[in-house]
View 1: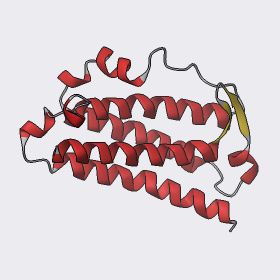
View 2 (view 1 turned 45 degrees about the vertical axis):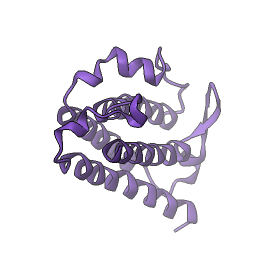
View 3 (view 1 turned 90 degrees about the horizontal axis):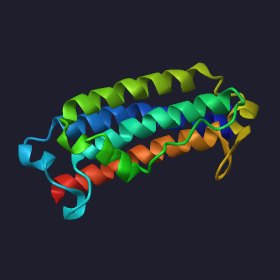
Length: 161
C-alpha cells in the first residue's frame, strides 16, 4: 500500500468519525441556552454552523463528483457563507434537523468517496481546473475533514462562550 493510499484511508476514517463526534457534541448539550449563544458574542449560532456545514457538504460533494468525472468545476455558490447562513434562516432553525440533514449529506459523500479505488493515485491526484487553480480529489478529501474540525472547534467555543 502506498503512503498516499494510507493517507486517503485515514482521511475517509476521519470523515466518518467526525459524524459521530459532531453528533455526540450536539446531542449532549444539556443547556438550551447554548443554542442561542453566538460565537464570540456576534458570530454564528450552533444552528448556523450546522447549516453552513450542510451547505458546504452539498458543494464539496458536487465538486468531488465533478473532479472524479474529469469535469469542470460545478457552479460556485452565488453568495458567500455568511450571506447564505442568513438567507437560509439557519438561526431560526432547530439544530437537530440540521444535524440530521448534514449526517445524510455526509453519508452520501462518504459513499461516493468509498466507491472510488483508494489505490488509484492517478484518479485521486488528477486535478480539475477551478477558479483558484488545480484541485484534486486528495485536496477535497483533506479539506472536507479539516473543515469539519474547524467548525466542531467553533461549536465548542460557542458552548464554552
